[in-house]
Amino acid sequence: MTSSFLFNITTIADLISMLLFFAFLASRSKALGFTGITVAYAGFLAETVAIALRWKESYDMGVGHAPLSNLYESVVFFSWTIVLIFLLLDLKYRYRVIGAFVMPFALLGMAWAQLGMNTGIEPLVPALQSNWLLYHVVTCFLGYAAFAVACGISIMYLIKANLTESSPASRDGRIADIFPPIRVLDDLNYRAIMVGFPLLTLGIITGAAWANYAWGTYWSWDPKETWSLIVWFVYAAFLHARITKGWVGKRAAWLSVVGFAATIFCYLGVNLFLSGLHSYGGGK
Figure 1: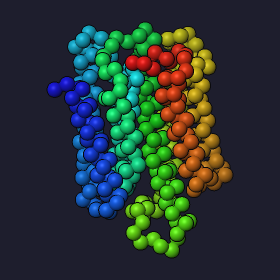
Figure 2: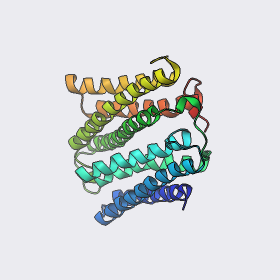
Figure 3: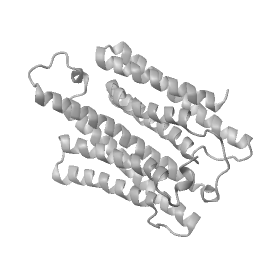
């Protein structure tokens, strides 16, 4: 059994889980919701084993390093962290309908990685040969995953708010009726960002320490660094507005969606379209 085989299994599991959550959303069948989360757990387990196997395979090839060194490996890990944050959220709150708005992010990442990228294991470039790689990537992607979950919840909030405003009297039979209460969605959005923001902050700090180790300077206004700071300011603005101005509801939901769009550009757009010190991860 190889890591590639298990990554393919993960992609299939994510697809099935997403479809089951869509069916749960349409039918309100608790059995479908339970099956959807069960398949999500199975896919998560398969991907966990696959990541461990890929790590071992790199050592077997004599280039041993954590599988976090190129675009393929980072996208796979990003998908893993998204499912991890969603499953932790499910353990605490049991709002399984959220899976219909979060699992598509994980599936898109896995499908793109499996179908459109070079999956080979390659030696680390000199700048990546540091333990800071693990600290920086793990903290950043856990933060990104929390923002992905917050974005999915915000989309749910906006759908439910718009439907409630357009037809407040006719509630029976609407898909959004299975959503958590609107105040709960608003609170879950805030809680997810409260998890993601300190993780992103740690990611920026560890990145600065790594930059000093690799390039002799903590900050060089590289495009990746600049966009990381932009994302940090977006979510800092969200938390500041929430705590001091009482921002809730649609404004908070839209800012969460904008923040995740900025996060995706920071992660993918910078690597794929802008040149800089981090462009070694763009084409691999």
